[in-house]
Image (cartoon, rainbow over all chains, first blue to last red; front, side):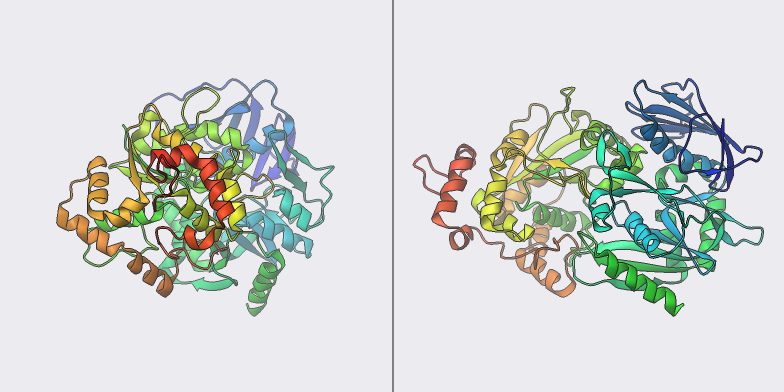
Length: 299
Length: 287
């Protein structure tokens, strides 16, 4: 078994999961190979095209890759399809199954990327394609440590302060972004079926400790020029936090509504939430980063 | 349950206008609905975030073909969970997956309203929308492999939409075997609005009287839409285009296309143009 510490958890895993930090403690979670049924027993509480969930268990079917059974917040069983390579296996494991496991354990996984700034955590959230990983890569290139990409595991401290836990030490970037950063892609891994999206290891400046969440940038697009930024205040802060939870529909079916509300309220209370509107289409990444740095410097 | 009515069209054929009409009708307000808050229709079939949420898998982790394989299941779930008819826009052609099942599953499909427009005018509007030359627009409309969001190198907010040529797009939907298809011509929406919108409303199984339909037509007329866009912008406008509601004129191709370009469109799209009344048997262009 491989032992890791990621997402605030000790993980013992049968498959090797590159990007997770080495760990040695008593495992909170076991990831192993085994048989996974096509369907879960009734009653099914919620289902999607490729998943179903009941009380305590979640089943994901990724066609041609694997079936994943996530149970009770402490186990992921993987039924690997023949021919699935290691890149695909780790990609789809450290994805919806991990997100679901975090929900089962009472975390709020946000669909976001995260950096360290002055001892606190700043996250970038928004829908797929809006530029969360791109802005993360840009900040990293300019010396900022990274905590997470895609899934930001958030929990509350005893005092009700939201903390972001380090995720995996890589990010997935598309070819056009890597070209912008003049990154050599020849040594990078990618899915056989998705050859233009690459797994980029974060070999340096990966921040390996939980940090208090200080600021949330909600990235959105618009069809006019220029970058606009506006602070979201009061009750309105909770909506972007709620709507940008990782796999919102699944999380909604798993989470305790009162606990979710408490989590969202605490995040709203302890953080500054700002909406960034950038022009649709290709990102002017340097301009966007500079706007955010200027905003961070204002405090 | 078959709860989805697809509002299908080639881009720039009046789909947005039709959806705004429907929104005004369903909102049942006296004043025009806000064009930036069209909530009575239900988005576009190729929305990436809907796919991610309802499949449980991130589309950006999949190839275009892997995404397509899961799309029929997505529409079945949307349809099964709907409490009323969903009106969903689609720019995809009516295509089949390798297993021969249609991407838009009959099990979810209540019907199809297919909106068609003279391809000569589409060419002009499509060029403006894309910020490209007229010739490029015409070439795209004649290209069997043309589609939207087809590139692999960059992540965009919509899934790949295979369209084929303009003619292939029209025929794919209007000749589809299973769904019940009602064709609406853009030109008839302008010239015979009451009849055209009323028959579409009846096809959709909506129960509205003449007064309500007339009011929705008034509240979604071109001048109202253009004015709203000038005052508040329109979120569906392409960043490459100065405005979404540009001229809304029938026959604007006469000012913008060269004789050679007109010939090319007619040559590429001849049979379907004839079929839908855009070209006479003698080769004369109508509109």
